Length: 158
Image 1: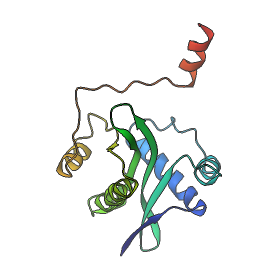
Image 2: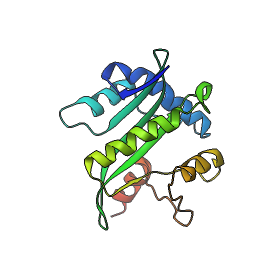
Image 3: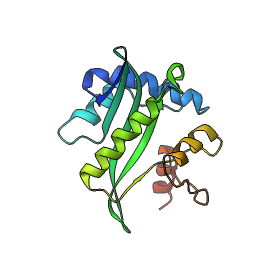
Image 4: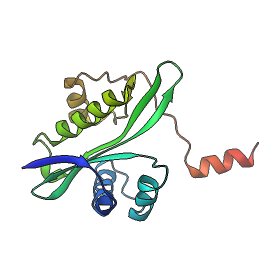
C-alpha cells in the first residue's frame, strides 16, 4: 500500500538518501553537498525554500518530489520541480505518477501558470514518462548554470 503526503523534518534523512541515490544514477555521486540538517533548515524554517512530497510503501519512503516557487516574466507564478525521485527498488510501480499527481494538484491549487523541470537527455525512460503525462520536453533549450566556483571566479573578475 502506498501513500503520498507532505514531508516532515523527520523525513529528511531518508529524503537525503534518495537524493544521493539519484546522484549515483545521474553519474555524479560526489556532487551532493547538501546535508539532512541543511534540508531541515531550508525546508522547515520561517520561510521554507521548498515543498517536498514523499510517497511511502509499507511505511518506508520510496520516493520524493521536491518543488519550489519561481517567477516567469512571460507567465507569472510558476513552480519548478527540482527532483522527482523513486528508489531504484520501486521504479515501474506507479509511484512516480502518484508523486507527479501531487505536484500538479498542488500547482493547480496555487494557481500557477506553469510547472517546469529538467531531465537529462539520455534518460529516455523519464522523457517517455513525462511525455506520456502531457509534458512538453523542450529539446531545443540548454540548461545554463554557474556553480559556486564559477560564481566566485565571476565576482573576482568584475
